[in-house]
Image (cartoon, rainbow, N blue to C red; front, side, top):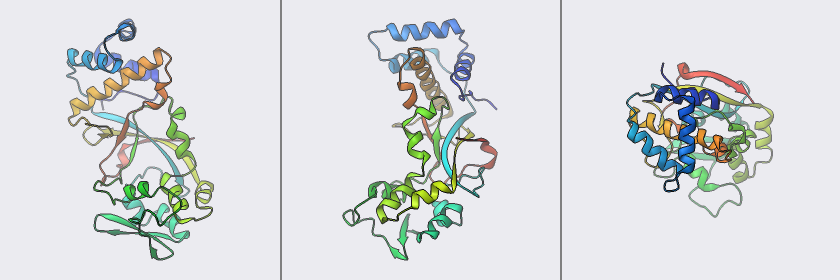
Length: 270
């Protein structure tokens, strides 16, 4: 089971050095070279370095750190995609039903109902609150669906990432539906009956997708991109940059995939 441990910066650095056969001194010299190069941006320097190095060794797995506020009674090892969570019987769909919100599949997207009435999400001027464009995206109204399970590649500094506090009170979907439909107390009820976790998964490189423009496709390409991002992250920490907090590679699964139970490593209550 070959992967680079990214739970701490120290483990990440050790893993990168081992894969690239670099000593601690050589790693530090790399950072100095990046810093002193006036012609190339850091990302260009690292890209060229990895290209010249010729990374032939590939990683079989990658960690994914998933931030999630889970309702009480949820099986922490189970992580289905959004479509299944809303359409099938689940703690989340039961929670919404308690507040008279239900969902039904319809020709490639998910219809939203409140008190039995279909909500016309194509009418952007009907509602005063909530982000209707976000909801349309998450419920599959756009050309591309957005039902996926996602997370971050690096655990360190995650508490300082802008998404950490955003996701800590309740899922974005819950907050937006509360504001869109003006359901007072929906988010508070969710918060009071849930706990916030950082859930670690170990996912095969063949199954994971990198959420970025022009994502790598092969396992070798994914390995090189992971190393690219890891070195930049270690470099940012070396020079004391605040970028290390928010520059975290986002990972995802395909929209119709669920996290397999054997990928679960641990759940850390936050």
